Length: 112
Length: 115
Image (cartoon, rainbow over the protein chains, first blue to last red):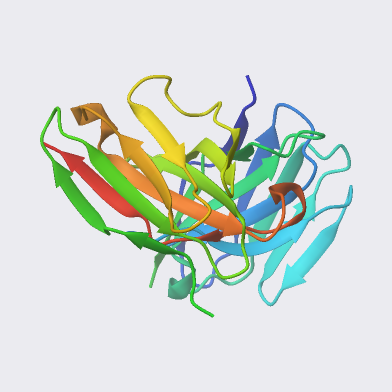
C-alpha cells in the first residue's frame, strides 16, 4: 500500500543549529504539502509544492520537491525554540486526489 | 472568517457507548476530510465527504464507524460501541475544492478517551 515515510522520527538540536527532515513516498504524488503540529495542537499548513524540482523559501524554512515527485525535504536554518513541533509532509497520490497521505512525521525539539 | 470548528474538544466514553464528533467547515468550504491520530503517530485518512455525498471512505473501518455531511449542519463522525482502541484524536479538515489542488484547514480536533 501507499506509504509516506519521514526521517528522522525525532530530532533534538541546540538553538541556532540547522534542522532537516526528509519525506519519501512509495508512489508519485500530485503535490506535496507540509504541516506543523505543536504538542497538543492541530496541523497547520505551511506550504504546498506542485512542480517537479520546485524549491520554495519561507524566511528560515526551505522546502524542496524531488524531480520524481516522490520525495521532499524541509530545512530550517538557525532553529529557534518557536520551531518546536512535529513536521508532517502530506500529499495525494498522483491522479487520484481523494486520499491524502500524511508522512510519519519528524518531532523537533529545540534546546535553548 | 471563522476557522474549522469541532466539538466537543474532549469526549469521554465507556466501552460500548456511542461517540458523535462534529465538524463545521470553514465558510464556503464544501469538502470535508476526517483523520485519526493515535498518540505519537501521524494522521491517518478516514473519509472524504462533500455535501450529502461520501466520496471516499476507504480509510474508515468497515464496522462501527460512519460519517455524514448533510445539506444543512455540520459533518458528523459516528463511532458505535466504542472500544479502548478507538481512543485517539480525531481531526477534520476542510477545503474549498478537491484536495489535490488546495491546502486543507484543520480544526482543533476532538480527543476521544474510551474508559
